[in-house]
Image (tube, rainbow, N blue to C red):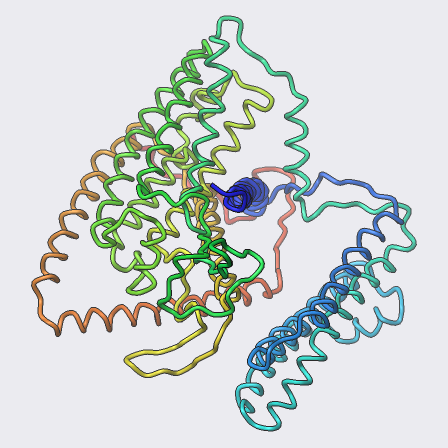
Length: 592
């Protein structure tokens, strides 16, 4: 292995580990924040770091100045080729528009909260609700794209391109600097500034707090097993991300038989595969693929069992037994559920599964039952509500980590959130197309259906791969949020219900899915050309459905975020008054 390969491996491993751990940290904040919103209680926004005013102003101005300087330097030192000027002009113009309206919305929101302080605040306040600025920015985005499409290839279009090519970076740099200057100016009268980062400092404070807590070990516990159990639980759920591809392959130039990492190929054909100079966005490319995932993920069972056994506590032992039986039960369902997907994809390599979905249809369409079975089993595998029986505080105190404190407890606690991230990443790879987005290919965006092309937008290789990476991250975050929503929606199962669900419902359903998949594959293999053509058309239709659904969800989400909050507060002094205000109490015959 060359030095370049070692550096490449270390860099990818670092990125994946940071992605998994940082997303898990954010999930702890989202979990508390969402719970506080649903239960109307104080959220995790109490941790604050007080900074002197000069330091806070420097933290606002210096990064903005560096970002503005980097934008101008990139524009002056890396000129675009004639074929790339249009893309760069559109890119920087859209970024400049975004920076303008985002800065305006932030200033308008601040003015609404603290009142008018200067002439700029008075002008911003005259614009009315901050939502108006957002709507104006959205109209500017759409209008710019529409005008560019209508004038493409005309003299006016070329003139507009040159204006956007020069003015876009300048306006973007100016907007970044102006926002930072306003933020620094608005705190000029404050002696100190509280840094909260929307509550994200709270998980950091919790982490620092656990470092200094006492590492308690029960007197009669097995010290070795008690100490190694948190490591056995935490390590597997993190390293399994090594085989999950988070983006398409990057193709670099090759010089003298070695990969030149400084020269990335500008464009790659849609079906092109670079044998030399290929850098897969995957830490390790194993030929066993998903089998590695299940082999390592299964060892997490040992950590929970060891923790329960080594703690010399009956509640810990009960929790360890529950965890081991629960995880073994749902591991079986997880493995059987994936078999149907393996039969269709014809490979155990995760990157090849993503490419099959990009060429045909996403796994959720070809294996819909498997997706829901896998999702349910993955939630149960993470031992979170409503499947948190191994640490049910109302029954067995805290389960298998009752006797743990400090960082050892934090490793158990944090491993559950990392397990949510890894399970979401695997579900995205198996069933939601991985890094793939409909109609986005390695050389550009090509919207076509039934042999007719409706839109063609060329993209550089770097742009296409970056879009894929962002798509993968967005899908993982969406699935993580769904799992957190379940925590605050469903009540806890009884243990007999948990085991019944796994062995008598999910397991038979996964076997039926394997049988049905085999029968359908045999029927398709013996079918004629008409059936195969119909399946190809159906595959194209699924891409249209995914694209349409994604755009509709994006519009709904934006509308939901922009909807004014009208919260009705009910202030009462006793539970009797509260019940009366809600319409009184209703009694019914008690059922045995």
